Image (cartoon, rainbow, N blue to C red; front, side):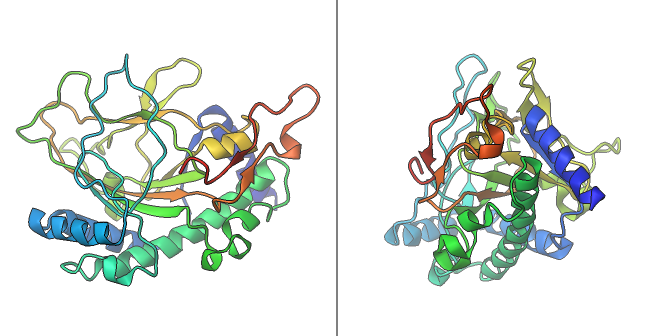
Length: 316
């Protein structure tokens, strides 16, 4: 019991200071991670005509697909928070929000890669179980009942026992070999995430973070997190087999800034390193009808609510 409470205290400290944490001992099976990651790599390695064909089928079913897009061409002096993600699935480009894939959309998975569907479904289910634990830790960390958030994500929220705002995005950052980025260009501009939590599996963490440079040092990946105290952006490479988790705007609203939704971005690799990247990004949002407002344990006479109540689906 004391160990569990210590985890909750560490959670509050990490998200109160940074809005980010690396999560180890998460219980997501290695084989589910590696299977999903490998399937994503195979998808992005498909010929462009195959991927475009899948885009056409997706459009016919009214998917929110952008295809290959460049979203990281911003400079530090003029970058702005990006809008909340509109969809998920497979994104080919520097970044992108291509397709929202629900479990019932069996015919919308790429016909040229049948293993993608079972791989993503297994990974999705495992990460959802991790999310449940994270929401319980969050509740206890701010003095609420352990099961408080279940109603907003679980069976009571509808959608067959899961929020429709739980979305898996397979993000592909294309190789920059022969295409060096412009000065100050980013792979993904500075932004916060709107929804609940984002659970990120970074590319160099596949197979337990065994991908290393010749000097034995793991690659940095590209994720950079803003230090709220200094404004500087710091590299955030995870330890082996760790998820990188960040809180979104709704968590900050719920907790009255006790837990932060912090600005982050994706930097380009060092000069001479044009490596392509694939990341697994799980966006966890409450049911769109959820009214998010300050929790009673996060406000008092000296700390009134700092954010107006907001409907979770209002801007997505």
